[in-house]
Image (cartoon, rainbow, N blue to C red):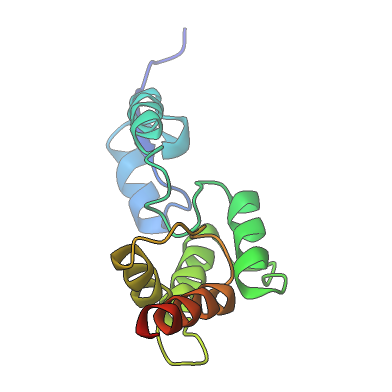
Length: 141
């Protein structure tokens, strides 16, 4: 008859010292990604996180982030980047994006909304800037 050991879920890789400590305490070590409590909590968070794009990558998987990076930057991402790095790179590019006139996408969108113009926020930054300039010229005539 085998002795039942209490299971502990630890994120891997487990350091040698930590592994020795847990085994000496009588625990059986299993990777934290297999923890049923963690999976239930993650599933509950996944339903609520579909809020229409608050995350820079508009997704929580690597392939979606890669596609978003290609769309935003115009070139393929480095294959060694993880999801967190990709999201950071995308956020950096989006925040620094400015039109030829020096205005950011947020400033141009705010001007267009203030002028009560209909526009697609997904249009290129240069198109939005041109629309803003045309609307200002029309208004100043």
